[in-house]
Length: 293
Image 1 (cartoon, rainbow, N blue to C red):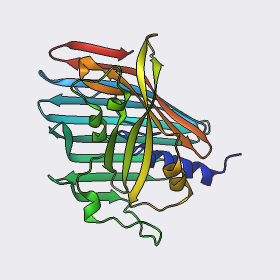
Image 2: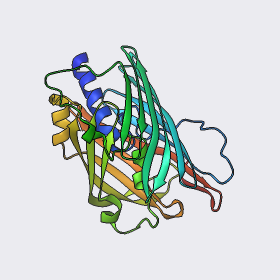
Image 3: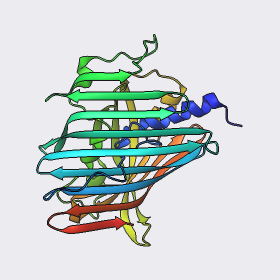
């Protein structure tokens, strides 16, 4: 029988490791997209995706939508997660906007809210040219003697968990070079914790899509490294020591990006996954590009 304290510890571990993409909250936001992002405007490139979330403790859905016009981008999403036959429910919404400079995301505003049966949470970040310059968190992070203190230096040159998805764009995604696809490091601040996610090429495989097709996928090993704002408890220690974190990337040259197809996160009571159910890009020049549907 899984104790409730153990359950919540694992949920928190998964959420915090999931800035892997977009996500400080994997089981609740991988790189989130809402089922409706509003009507696309002329000249905008839009992305919509849905992920199925599965874990020993429950299951859920992850919806994501983004739009980019010129160097400006906006992203929004929502996630729902249920466990113990619906006894525990976790819902979240997230949004981010900013611009692209030198092929890298430069966030402007990030907002996250979540509610479970036990508590509610809201975070809002405002960015300047060099990093985060304003943090609002409700409830505020409680002081703790074992918490690694955040400094202003920790908040420089970081992205929010949602904007982190843009690090997977590429002008010429390789169909054969896994090192090109995987090797990258992402500095993330989610409003409470500052951490790094470092990816490296692990192996090549094939992703079976929901439309029956198979596509080349590069499996990237992901290392979660907590920097500040966290307490080095059992869950954080487990995640930071894990070698089983993976992100599967499928190259999509027409859309100039690598699409995260699957995320695998070992937790202390098993393995959590998020797998692509459908993905569609609408580009004003090339039309609709569907990876799965």
